[in-house]
Length: 103
Image 1 (cartoon, rainbow, N blue to C red):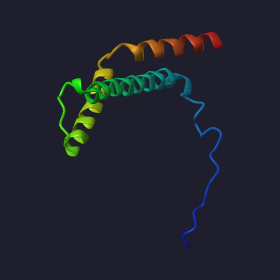
Image 2 (image 1 turned 120 degrees about the vertical axis):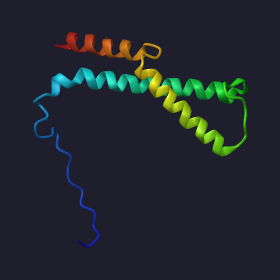
Image 3 (image 1 turned 45 degrees about the vertical axis):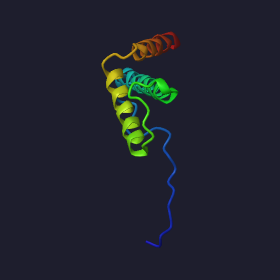
Image 4 (image 1 turned 180 degrees about the vertical axis):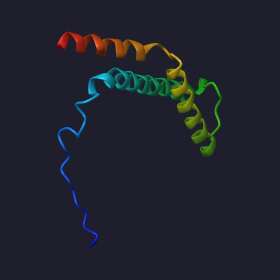
């Protein structure tokens, strides 16, 4: 090996992708919708904290801010997995309806 980087073309469709593809699409869409909802919730929590009227007060310590950011992100993920604001279900439902209409 000479240290050169070899770039292989990305296949248009991986082997075996057609089989089982339709069955897992609703699950993948719902997972993506949950991730979007978690991102939105984390941004809401961050903006509230940074506005000065935050739920943990103001610190000024960079390590505490980093830990608080991480805690907010994890809280947002757990919240979205437990139903959150209900956006994930609405988005996934809309995608299912759009998929049925496209067929």
